[in-house]
Length: 165
Image 1 (cartoon, rainbow, N blue to C red):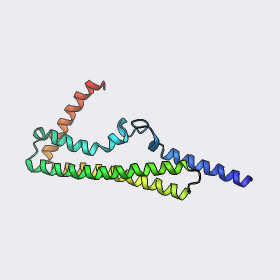
Image 2 (tube, rainbow, N blue to C red; image 1 turned 120 degrees about the horizontal axis):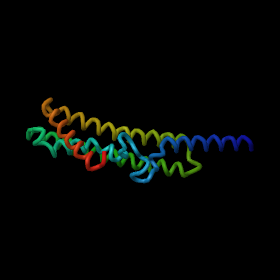
Image 3 (spheres, one colour; image 1 turned 120 degrees about the vertical axis):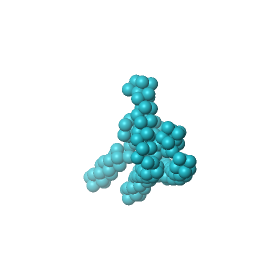
Image 4 (cartoon, rainbow, N blue to C red; image 1 turned 135 degrees about the horizontal axis):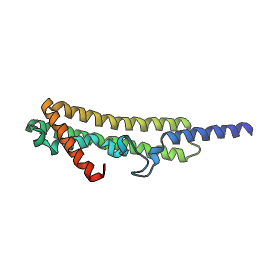
């Protein structure tokens, strides 16, 4: 009986650790998922798409050629496709992990595998953002990059006044 009690305590501790590790997975939409700079994970994950949208929106100011615009649109489409698939994979893994954690009889190896699957999907999403942004930036000339920085700074300073800092 003492051995069973000890096993339950160890199991409860491990499940607690797993839940604490993946807690952001179960937070309400838009809450408790704060990442870098105060943005939630969905907003952070969209920065690659946001950057592409920004470049296309300010194409004239930055001095993009029609060829560059075409390439950026192709990168944007590829990114959106990848993002949709990867976000779906992560969402399914979250749902499955949540179901496993609710099942007191769930095997710890299955829980661990699901946590690893979730982290792999989230990592792939982050890498897609980084890759799309790097690919887009590589299309710009040094002069265009400088113009892009200037447009970004101008927008940032205008946004500071609107958002109170």
